[in-house]
Image (cartoon, rainbow, N blue to C red; front, side, top):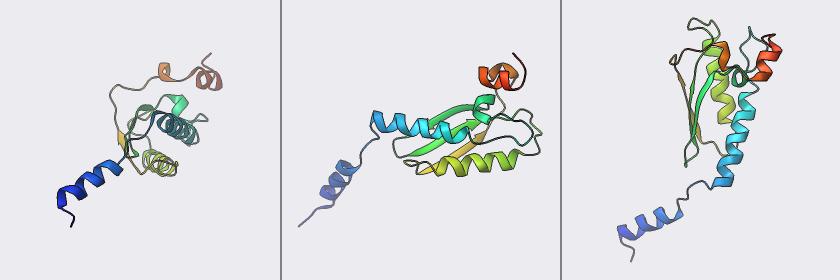
Amino acid sequence: MVYCCEIIKFAIKTTRDMDADTRLKTEEKIIAMLKTVYDPEIPVNIYDLGLIYKIDLQDDGEVVLDMTLTAPNCPAADFIMEDVRQKVDSVEGVTSSVVNLVFEPEWDKDMMSEEAKLELGFL
């Protein structure tokens, strides 16, 4: 006979947190995928533009991502956010993703990587 508390204990034992190596590899894959997303008006990926403010990979594989846009009235906002969601969801180890659009802090060109600044002629 199995009591309900034994079933719960078994379920808890089989639920494992993501180990550090898996977490690091998954985060690297997420960043690599984000580097394939572009604002159609700018020839630099959104990661190097500095539009990604936070990537929170949770133990269950859910990713919560905060991002911004170069301008609040960006006509490609929906396209970019959906592209981000689909590409992050495609990463092995990711179970789901939530993409939050934030405007604090306000984006400026100082948030770009050195590579992005060079590509756009700011260096």
